[in-house]
Length: 231
Image (cartoon, rainbow, N blue to C red; front, side, top):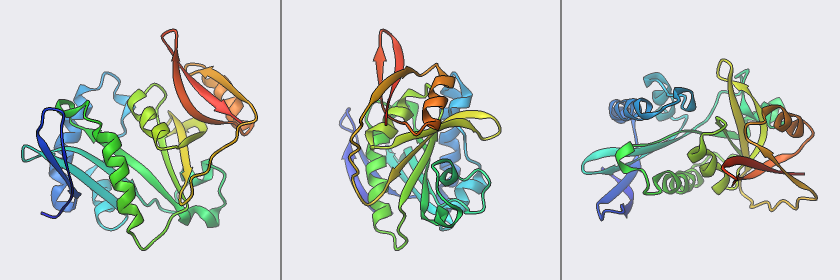
């Protein structure tokens, strides 16, 4: 096995990271099932099927996994979406049809419940983006969707400098934030105005986003999560 990264977990157990292939999908699905079973709200995660993982491993993205104790403990995926998809996230961020080839998605990211608290999601985020930089094909935008109140995933996206550009129904009526980031340059936004909205106030957030505001971080105020928006 060709591992490209080695690290150590909090309990001093070493782990290794490598690219995953079709032969790893059975392990991936087994771990995904464990993760889904631990979720109180099953809508938080949109699990992928064998065929969807195989689509990625067949050359339409990147799939990496972390291994410890001789088993898969975390994985993360990037997906190159079909430019003909009606629900393409590039359209949600305001791109034209001829620009959709410049978009790649941050797809599913799972950490085994027994190994949470080791910052594996963030570590794999950095590693998979490094792997992306080695690819011949270059992309200008990375997009992702996150359900409101999926706090770990929201923190993950904001920590990477991704911003909310839409809040709408995706995946057969499931409400999702649409995140994006421009690749290849660290764009520092100079906000002329900022405001906070409760994460639970869906309508007000949608109105603000439709006016061109962007969500760039989240905070907790008196026990309630808020999203900070700028324009």
